[in-house]
Length: 334
Image (cartoon, rainbow, N blue to C red; front, side, top):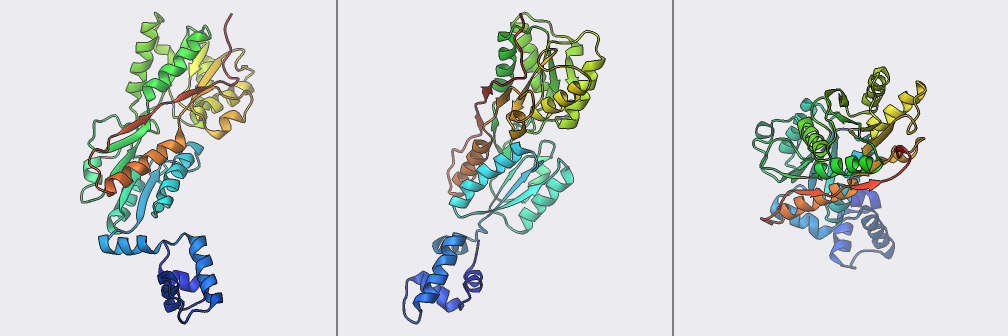
C-alpha cells in the first residue's frame, strides 16, 4: 500500500501538500495540486485511516499467499478470489509460486516471518506444519484438505462429494466398468490419494460394481500425467468404458494422447474431470467435469483470515460444494 511519500512522488507535489489534502485542509494548496493528489489517491486506492490504524496496531497490511502453480487456471482463480477480498479490506497480497517444492514453501514462510506478514494462506500438502510455522505468530489458512488432522483452519472443496458426483453421473450413463485416477502422492489440494480411493471403493461396492486393481491408475495430476494415463489405457487388452480423471489437466492430456492413437473420446472411452479449468471447455471434445468454486475458495479463505485478524474466535474450516458441468467427453452406453 502506498505511503504519503509515494503519493507525493506520483502526484509531483510535496509531502506537506499531500498531508494537507488528506486532512481536508485547503490552506496553501492550489486547486491543481489538490486535483493531482486526489487523482493519485483514487487510482491507487490509498486509504489514510487504514495506514494510520496499521501504524497503531503494528500491522504490515500484507498477506502471504502461496500456491503450487500460478499457471494453472485453478490456482489463478483461487488467488484472484482471495486478492479481491484483501484489496477491498486494504491489504496487499504477496503471491508466491512454489512449484510444489517444499524448500520454496519454507522460503516464503521465512519471508513472511522476517517481514512480519499479517497472515498466511498456503497450499502446502507435504509440509511439516509444526516446524514450518514455528515462531510465526499470525493467522494461517491452508488451501485444501490435508490428510492429517492439523489444527490450522482449512478451505477447499468437499472432495468426497466431488468424487461421488462424478461416479454417480457415469453410472447414470450406464457405465459399470469404471477406471479411477489417484495421484502418485498427494494431490494439489493436499488430499491423500487413499482418501480418494476409499470414496471410489465405497461407491462401487454400494452400487454392486466390481472394484479391480487394474482399474486404479496412479499418475501425476497434470497434463503429462494424462498422457501417461492414455498410454497405459492403450496398452490394456481389457479396458474400462469410463475413467474418472484426477483433474481436468489429466483429462485433457488423456484426450490429446488418445486421439493421436486413434482412440475416440467418448465413442471408445468416456472420461470425466474435476476442477473446471478454462481449457476444459476449449478442447474437442469439451471435458465434462465436476467444478470446484475456485474463486469462492480464495474469497472464503480471505474472509476467514480477516475474521481472525479482527479477533473472531469461532472461525471454522470450510469445504465448498462442487457441481457437475456436462459437456462432451462422456457417452451414454446402450
